[in-house]
Length: 264
Image 1 (cartoon, rainbow, N blue to C red):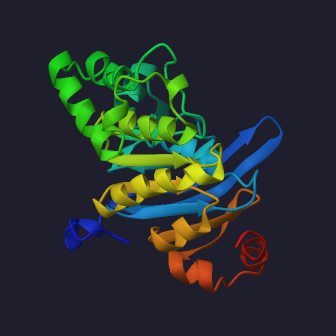
Image 2: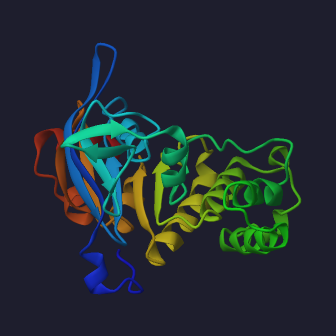
């Protein structure tokens, strides 16, 4: 579901280009020449069994994992590397950190500072990294908390919040950096079933606002209803990739069919 607020001409532009990416950990090959494109305003969902390479691919997009071969570009700029004389040279850590400012990421675990309130968790990066004044950061943080439905939890510490509430604070924290791209790595997998809906509702709202998103998920209903495209991964490759509703309802590859038969 691409939001109406994203102009049609803008949607045709590539936000993320992944080209023949390889990644190994020691002798274990995790990504074997993965290629895909995510357009502006698109919600791209990655599905597949554990160990298929989904989370690794996501972490490569913001250079949390270094690729062994291939290239990844976000909004036309290589991630983690500069090209010189037709060869790629890895960037300094500080330059990679600068690139990551425009890429928000939400992990399975919430990684909130336990000694800081929800509001304090959100303002930390805008003040320290973006150089915003505390007053501006606080005002924006309150807006983000309202956006995720937690305006009444600003003064609560993580230990006083449910898992779903902590994950929504983590989403608000990522949004506070004003990212152009959001990455979600199985954001509901650590939650009790009754808490999943609130987090998915926030993600749905983000999608409807036109946010470009790549989502690793086991929530097939979300992938079908909110995703624009779905890529099914297995064994380090993309086995099937296409329109979300079509792939979920009528997968063409036998391996995709077998996987969806077990999880639907």
